[in-house]
Image (cartoon, rainbow, N blue to C red; front, top):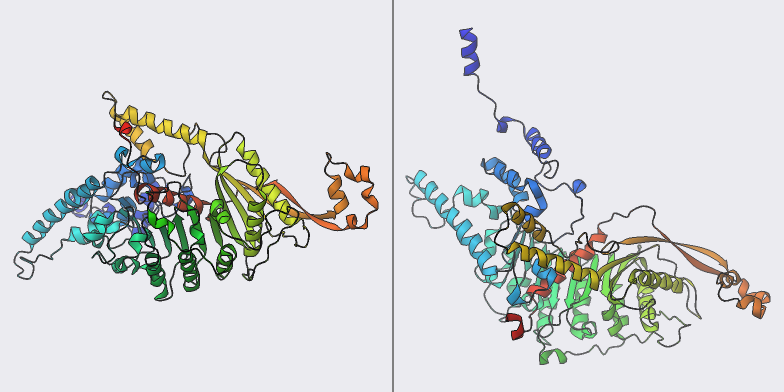
Length: 608
């Protein structure tokens, strides 16, 4: 017995890390109920809400209740830190703690969670700086006998090179200060960068060369910053670019031309371009159209283009009135012809106001019976595209004549297959008006008028109430109440943590339980076309009994076939990545409006 006991004691005990990697992965996945999968990333199949790409989601919110446990597990050894670090520290913002200030559109002096100087100091000096210093001293003490290490200022500890949190950051938000002091060199795995600050004034200012970031594929920046050669050096390798053009700050004749030249250097890998403008007539400016044409020609893989109008207009200046208007013909037709040069284009989104501001010499504004859609080059793409039309203030049950003709021209010229209508509610029961807008428009397209032919290429439509005066007010009051409760003295620790979790979970695309049923819920409809005699079509209108009164049944023309659209609610839910793309762009627009667009100074009444 003594021999058996001694043999049992002499056998080494197998530890957790002695297990095969596959077993360790499965244990972590099981313990976190698949919130963390076998590769340390979120499991898309288990996510309840579809989170858009390229948005800032605090790490604690993304992991949820398991964050502290996973963080503690990663702190036990370097192996688990390397395994779980990409998920624990994926997103970092040096500008804000959450998106609440941007969602509520808080003025600069009234921002609650946007103290960029404090967050920068905490991250670099108190967290990274302190740990780097202590770990370097420990490693130097351990290896002090090595002459090549002792006294070497460039020496980095193992913690600094591979284990610290900055080594796992893939999404980063920063301001201009981080560009100037080379903070970006601390993030070797950075892929997504959002610069939330007003533009750099000096074009020749010495800043960090963004082309040194090897994996950078997404950049959100203002045009006044992108014109800097150190910033636009990364343009050829980007997959997505979000560009804010504040025409109050840009210099006509040079700034946009420098950005255009950055695309002309070599072929670009850009797949998605999102441009935010603060002038309604921006798409009529020659330099803007030249930029679009250059991007389309140089970026062969371009799949998505979006043009959005900011709700804030920035601080006005005289520069905004000196931009040269496109004068080589119809700006609208030129813009659409330019888009048709992009053979891989699949998604196009634009505000209705921007479309209406352009000139269309081929559109008949007054005659409602004639729809003309002549263009110099119809789309030759083998596939149809998805077209998203945005109207933040819908107030009519139908498009006005000119708007209807313009949208009709765009749909036919680009060969649209899916039509998505995102609107803002300003009157009651606006969801009925939105449905009437799209159904009336599809019917207008499918029935020929005069000399123009029908268009029956639209197979799916959708509507979504993205903004609402009542719903947005409800959300604002809800979060203001949470902030007021958070400031109370006698609040419990558990309640404080619960409120902070709710505030951190506030995003541009979310809704609360008090919102109306259709608020930010996309409804899909399938479109089918059927042929019938024109006489039968007239008889389907019970309120107009003209056929019987005027004895029109004998007219031969009424026996001709017409195509009638049939629109029905989709029986099965639609799950495609593109339907979250709108909120990805909208979230970026909201962020850049809040932090990158200059705001007017507040009146003294805000401080009383």
